Length: 494
Ligand code: ADP
Image (cartoon, rainbow, N blue to C red; front, side):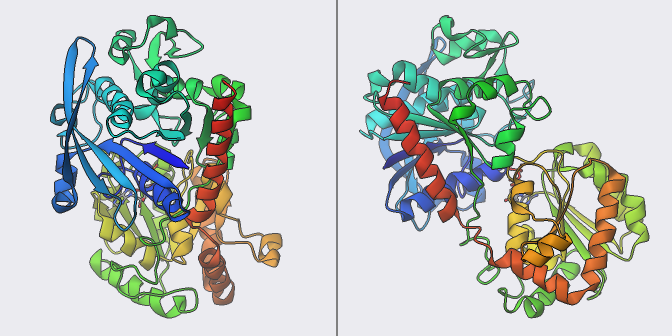
């Protein structure tokens, strides 16, 4: 198949979260299966510089001009490849929109033109297809930033030679919807007739996530459990009704992990490489290295908890802070890596200040340290309020780091709780709970520590996690099925 994937972030060009991992790993896996892939994403010069990408990005000598509202806006088109693959990447270079310190930001502040920036990206996708004569079978858009793409394709696709191209839209997080005041409808360049409650409007505002959901031929989200959850009021963020009306076209596909990047046997960031046969030898070396790197006392037998995450209430940090006193009474160590909500950051830093021998916190984004935490920790904490898929629990499982998770979304689909029955079947690989309460999390932590002392069972849990197939190959096959369904729907004039 000929597939164009578009997304507002993609590794190694940019990243704020899991979306960037998926946007590069999925095309890579699809290309490895023999398909022809293009990726279209913004060029964020400040990120490219940080990641040392200057040499890998070239000019195409082409530019595009798009009318946004009353202005004609031009962008240069740069090109690259996803490293080590045949996937051709087009980078949309529009400095007014994308030459900024961050990718997204304060909707009232420096990033108040977010709608305009990503309408531009969405229109650029169609323009690039025309300019480079790409006639894909499907265009795969992701999250609100490219939510306009399925609408543009359906309404204006014929103007770009894309009348036969199907669209598929993936929801990575229902909490971010791209909601803007109604006058931003003018920026989209689409007729006001689409600004109605069945299509692009939501409570009087323009909603780009809803737009994607309404117009795409097929919808996917990033785990089977999340696909069910978002049809409910609790997880649907107001769009549960819209999703329920499209449930026939909605599938949940668990993300994979990029095994070239997240593999303890080859990981260049960690102190000692290991696999499931050498985990008991390699992991302790990584643990000591982590304790040293984070300034914690080196204790082999003290259980070490790790957490890497955006610091937001979504990730359950309030639960952790809620039981931190009890945690501090135990003979354990914890390392946290992340950035986000300043109030929660302060809470974590205060904890580290009060108990420097037990808690270590690094505020910031640090790729190398994230690998070292996965390899060096015994137990990984991920008590999310909601979790569309979650990648860190899968990295943890692949690294023999036993996760404690809340059984929601992709966490429920990847972490199999330690019960007698699951231990008997050999499927148990971690610990999970449901009730969103600090004391329930703390009970799980205590239960986990009980098993940590039982070295035989612990090793079995580690090996079960490490030997399951977390690769993108499996997910890529499921995406292909969804692409084929989208093409069928498109050809039947859906
Ligand atoms: P989300 O996309 O909701 O942030 P995921 O678990 O799906 O959560 O993906 C998060 C990704 O970002 C993982 O690859 C994780 O390792 C990475 N990550 C998050 N915060 C940091 C950080 N502070 N430093 C390094 N990597 C981080």
